[in-house]
Structures are given as C-alpha cells and as structure tokens.
Amino acid sequence: MIVAVTNQKGGTGKTTTAISLAGALGQMGRRVLVVDLDPQANATLHSGLMPEEQEHTVWTAIQQAGQSEVERLDDRDLRSILDSLWDTQSFNPSLIPIVHHPNDNPYDLVPCNLELSEADLVLASSVSRERRLATVLAPVQPEYDYTLIDCPPHLGILTLNALTAADSVIIPLETAFLASKGMNQLFRVLLQVKQTLNYRLSVLGVLITRVDRRTTHSMHIATEARKALEHQVNVFTTEVPVNVDLADASAAGKCVTIHAPQSRGAIAYRQLAEEIEGLRHG
Image 1 (cartoon, rainbow, N blue to C red):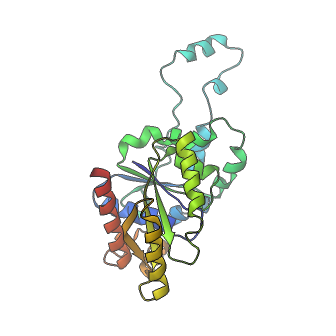
Image 2 (tube, rainbow, N blue to C red):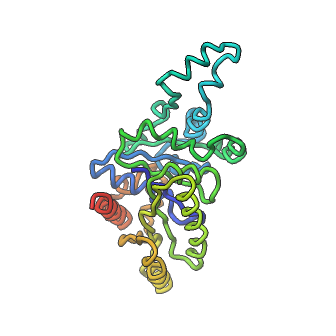
Image 3 (cartoon, rainbow, N blue to C red):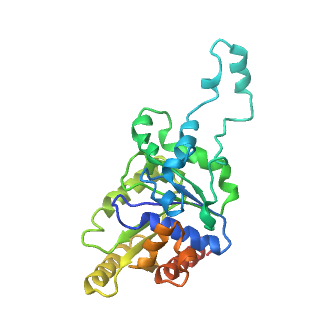
C-alpha cells in the first residue's frame, strides 16, 4: 500500500506524520518504506541522515527511470534495436542501492537532498514525467506492507508523481486559523489526478494535527474542521496533540515511538497506525 502524505500548506506536520507513522507501523511488525520527496529533506534529517552526504537519492532513481533502452543503444546498430523489441527484460531502475536502514528506526528510507529541487525544471518537458516515481517504486513494492511518501508543501511535479504512484492519501491538517481554506484546491487536484493519471487514488483520511487542548481556540478549530470535512471524506478519530517530544525526536534523528515511546505524540501515532490497519483490513 503506497500512501502519499500531502498538503500544499507547509507546517501541517507532513514529515512528522510520515516518520512517526512509519515508526509505529514498523513496531507493529509491518514492513515500511519512507520516501523523502521534499527537497528540504526533512524526513532524511528526521531519520538521522545528513542530506548533503547522500550520493544516491530518490532523485538519482527518478532520473534513471527516464532512461530508455533505446537511448542506450547505438543508433547505427539496427539489429540491437530490433532485438530489444523482443526483450522480455524491460529497463528496471532499482531502488535497492539507495534504500537505507536509518539510525535503528523500524523502517527503511529512500533519502533526498537539495538536488531534488531540480525536478520541476528537468522534468518539465519529459515524457511521462508524472509517472517516474511509480516506475521506481513498482519493483520494490512486494517487499513492503506500506510505502509512505513525504510530499513537498506545494502542488508541483513531485507531488503529482507521488499522487500518481499512491493508492491513497493522508492529509495532515493543522488546527490554525485558515488552515483548512486551501483544502478545496487540494481536493480538486486529487480529483484531476484520479480522473487522468491514477484511477485507484483515494483519500485514506484527514489527520487533525497540533491540537492544543489547553486553548479553546485550538479545540474549536479542530471541532469545526471535523464537522466541515467528515461528511465528504474520512477524518481520522486520532488527533495529534502539540507535543515537544515530537520535535525532540526529530532533533535526535529518531521516530517518536522509539525516542519517547510513552509520550502523547507516540501514543497518538500508535493509535493512528491501529486505525489505518483497521481501515486497510476491514
């Protein structure tokens, strides 16, 4: 199951959700892969890796996915070209050399770095540019129960790649004023992708994050957001509280379920993992 964690607004808890949920699912015995698709490389950092030190990244694989067998043949070698038409072994960019087992976290990671910011420019005129990530992920999917894609905070070519590859979407929604105002735009994009690129795409759920139960304002927004959305899409019962342990876990390069297993943040993401397991199997 491939899940894109996305919201075009920044600061909603996408990376925290991708990493913390991966940790919770991993501790439940599920095989989990996290793909860092945000050029800011926050998921890579959160997992304890230094982005600038990564020689091979998801961008390496995406670029390789654009190389066809024909491009690698000598134009003068007609026989080689004809032979390749009958070759049952299609070009298969491998993620295996790029996958890391980071910092004792219970998931695998495909890292990225700032080079990924070239994607919008480089892929602008490429054939099947929205399907590059799907091509890269397809060979490794039998190895994992869940692949979680941490998307960038805008609806560009990288997010389109994630949505084209994904089976479903988790949308973190921060309890802040106007945080839900861009939801209509996001839903329109999801509908367009479903109609034109990926018919199986669905919304797994909206996750309300950064709920501060100490303030009436935060609780009011959480309640209103749930009322406004739950008749349209699934809104997870789980709500993620404001919790300093989530930030501390990121600084330590660990998922919160490893770094602070008894914290409110860890408890919330374990509940979310159980909720998703229930949705998937029942």
